[in-house]
Picture 1 (cartoon, rainbow, N blue to C red):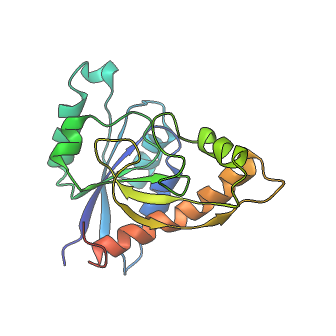
Picture 2 (tube, rainbow, N blue to C red):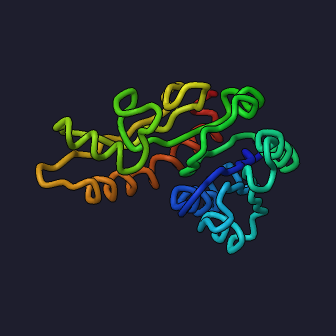
Length: 197
């Protein structure tokens, strides 16, 4: 089987992206990182891409005005991307990109969807909501991106216990640790044909 070409969209640290890049270096991992795009020219994700020797681009309204979607599509096509990985991409992906790569865009969300998803539910806001509701478990969800926030088909989830003394920081750290395991595992299953998109 040919390797699955991965294209990343990230806005800040890119730690999930790094976990996937590291997994791709293993012999039994049938995917390869081909390109990284960030809407933030100062993002650590771009620095990680540079260090790893992966082509990288800064694409935002500052660089492309109203043509961000076309620019993203152009770069992904140029690098023959099969699967787009959102790794902390803090902009809503344009409908044009979602339609062009329908069913081939993944995101990871720091709660057990369908709970605690939707507009404005990201990062600390998710963990605050989980704690405020008194949930006993949380954990990451990998899902297919569609036109509605956090709505697409769920591919995998991993439960993380919520402890009585948890803060948003402690819960976030434990969930992120599992994200770094679940995201590469899910991509490997797609690359191996165990999950069909």
